[in-house]
Image 1 (cartoon, helix red, strand yellow):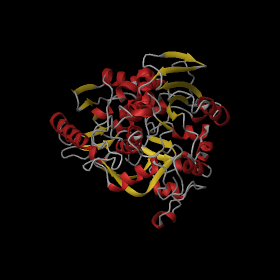
Image 2 (cartoon, helix red, strand yellow):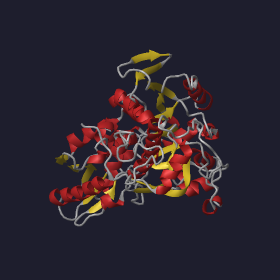
Image 3 (spheres, helix red, strand yellow):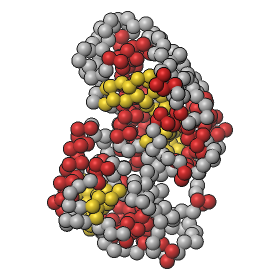
Image 4 (cartoon, one colour):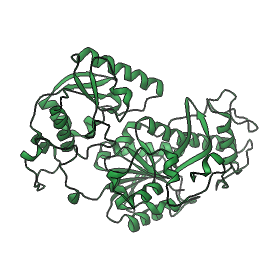
Length: 463
């Protein structure tokens, strides 16, 4: 199984057309087809067949999260087969399902019929009748006692096989990127303190990637794994090093916690909001949780227009979304963007809007971008500092594009302060996980730094 890779917008649109063509060619007219869509309505729309989201809720809408296990996936498949679904499609961007849900993959290969496996396009199974009790064959721990009987699973709900009171604490893989440990010598200890004080039940593995060390370094260090890094794209290439090292063991974890040694700078009060209950509320959901930042005005980069992003120094997301990304790096080099002239550092034809150029230049050189705050590591732009400017500017671009790509993959960006506020008065099932970013920031129980823009001040937008 090859690793899932992120597709640019044009390539993804082309993939949607290829998936539709494949369904038309191999699926009988009028069939009900389940598609692992991540909520993309464009994927399920097509002539000659009825496309359904997989997974979905009782209303037929995309569920917004993944099954907690193969057992739950198979039980849900049984429910949808009973409703009339006869085919299951995994677009190429969703083929990680067959690696992650190994029990489901075994079930599909032994009970159902593989109709299509077209490299770069999709995998299609024709579904056969099967008893819902087969979901138990996919349980990772077959010795775990259960009060559920096969009879009670004949018409199973979407998620029903695991009783809430039996849930274990989430397992977390922490990836910490740093460049030496002189500037932030106690970052790993400070992160450990956050988990010890706020999430003491969490089972955690720590991988530290040091971009100042040679790439071939692999050591155990104070209970963590220390790797030599790749500084070609700063922390983003370091994150990739850790993911490559972990390999298929990434599926042992419920969450990947991504952080940098500079996590405890600038606005940090949001860090207090992470706790065990908050993480448990995220289990199985296609969300990325951290601190949402925004600009006063929308910016444009490549073919995208955006205004907000997730701060890349401390956030949580699922292993599935890490695999779907393929790489944390979007822009591996700055050739398309930079002029090599400190007076006008961006190329005239660079795929970036004028306003975004101004924001980046002003921020990195220590000027206020209209939000009453300055970057902690600013420097003057000179011929000598230009390489550092380009390196850091590319990191800013990669951070913005990480949020854009996650949203394109169906992963919702969630502000941790807003989520913590919501969880104080309602259960996870009552929370709208697709709440727009402006509404999230408007409904936090505290602000960070108020944006100086009359269009946004009324909703308390923070950065």
